[in-house]
Length: 247
Image (tube, rainbow, N blue to C red; front, side):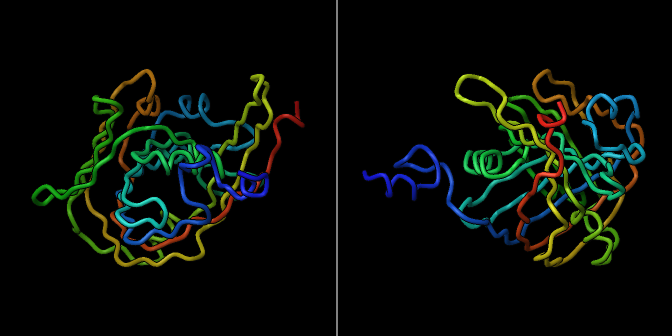
C-alpha cells in the first residue's frame, strides 16, 4: 500500500475501518427526554470551568437510531446539563453510553462526544413508553412516560433537542502526554425535521455504578418529559477554550 493510499484511509484498522467517512444522517431518530432537578453541589463537582451552571436541571436522554447512514442501527443514552458559556445557554454532555463500536469510535476520534459502551432500549409497554440503560449486565437507568398523552409543538420540541452543546475533547500522545484538552461547541441543529412530538407524566430511576456514575446526579424532581421523532444531521464541533494554553 502506497503512502497516498494510506493517507486516503479514514481510520484504523487500516483495512477494516471502524466507521464510515463523512457526516452521518439520521432518519427516524427517536428521543425520550426526561428533564429533572438535581443537587447543585453535585453539578459543581461535574461541570468543568469556564462553563457556568444554569439552574440545577439535567436532561436524561434515551435515543433510538434505527437508520443512520454509515452507522446503521444503534441506541445511546446520556446526561445533558444546563450550562452557559460567554452568556450563551446550552447543554454540557457529561457522558454518553452507546451500543455501536462505530458510533463510539467516530464520536470520540472525529469529534468530542464523551462516548463509552452501554446498551439502551426504548419500547412501548402497554400505555407506557419505557427507556432503559444497561452498563454491562447491570441496569443503571430506567425512565417511564405516559405514551403520547399530549402533543408537544414543533417549536417546543426543537427547544428541547436543538441547543448549543458543549463537550470536552481530551487526547493523549503516544508517550502518554496530554496533547489536547479543549472545550468544544456544537451549534444548534440546522437540518432538523420534527415528525411528531409528545409529552406526558414521567419518572426516572438512576442506579449507582462505579464506572457509569449516572446516579452522581440524583433525581430530586421531574420537570418535564418529551417523546420526539426526527430526521437530522449533527453539526461539526469547534474549539472554544484551550485548557493547555490557559495552564
